Image (cartoon, rainbow, N blue to C red; front, side, top):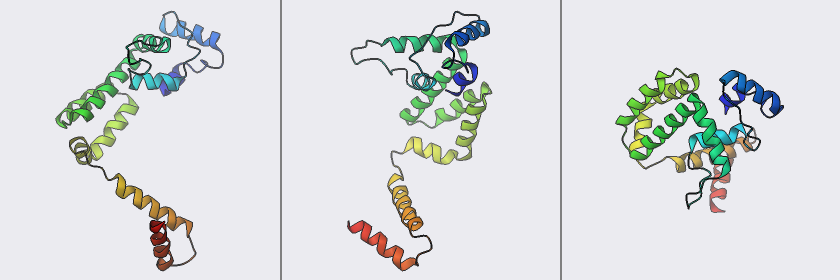
Length: 172
């Protein structure tokens, strides 16, 4: 999404100028994609099955996005990286994660490198998330609810009133 907006800034504003710039920049005939927003293209990059019916028939939009992705090496690379990361999460094998991080860092893309750096900073938690099906979502939800109640009461009273509000909220 960011790449598309950066490389085609006039796409939505002035399509004729955008088509001319794209043709000059990439030496390929540009195609007018009036119905596709950069957000939708990013959805297709992350999920190539989007726009294909259960019977296997692809929409016109899907074929247009395929043309865009195949015309850009960067978008094609991003699609491969995202899909391989998804496969690692589904496969439940954390050993593949190290290989994936090395491959992802090879292209020297700042956003991908930042993501990989974030994974490395808490690699134990990432590996556990891949291996185990459990989540701490229920605990985090309760903590979030408690903090929200606490913010509502800011400056009113002490712990006793907070405890009463939480207990009453639990009872209904």
